[in-house]
Image (cartoon, rainbow, N blue to C red; front, side, top):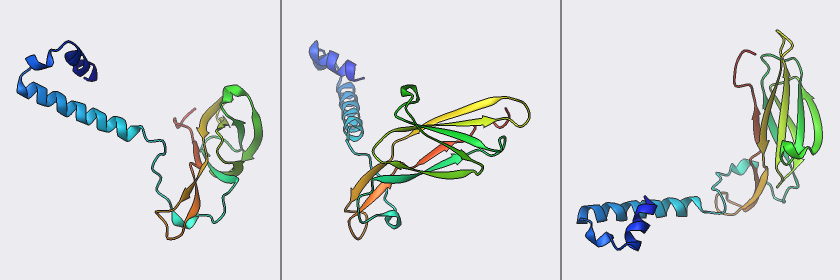
Length: 163
């Protein structure tokens, strides 16, 4: 639609349109501009749970890893810094529960790879997901200014029930 508006303006055809069509184009242009402005903000809006606030800026965060316990007794989790293709393995942990925590430095991207072994057959399924834990200094949402760590949950559950 934006292409049409620019094309009509460039070729001087906008004057040849009816008033109703011109009004529709202006409305589309305003809506499109609003979406661009809304989505172009540098910082995403985060709802802060003030109970989780910290007085001092943290250097590490506890990442909560959600696992699937339907098929496997013990799950191996490889943690990579950056993308999995970068092959920078920083830690390997094992878990027998549905949820486990791991402490990692903030403001870095981590890719997790959970390896599930089927109890019924010898199939192996890997689940890969990434997380980027960050910290924000919040001054407006809580009574006192504080540091809030967000993006600390990662889901490594199986999408399909049977494998």
